[in-house]
Length: 116
Image 1 (cartoon, rainbow, N blue to C red):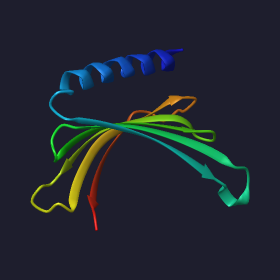
Image 2: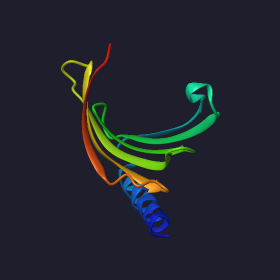
Image 3: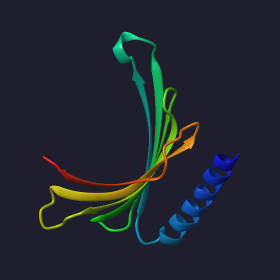
Image 4: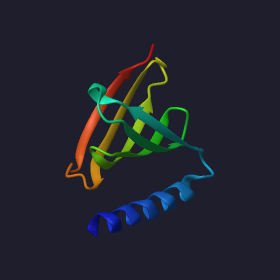
């Protein structure tokens, strides 16, 4: 029950934040369905929902929810900075947490990506 309340509160906060910034940037979303056959075994269908808010060309805020039948549901909230001088390097900081039937605690992370 706590997880459902937390998910609803997170959704409401996200909608309010996005609404406040809606005039300043671009909001995009995507839905990805992945079909996996790990080790030739049972087929899994993974659903990934992404909501991305581009505040500027170089600053993005992203909310991701993954629903996997084996690992259950997890959410990821992150901020990405695209370094304008190089246009091939970007840094992301975020937090990933299990939401439903997933014991993953809030786990902060930092990524540096080189795009080629």
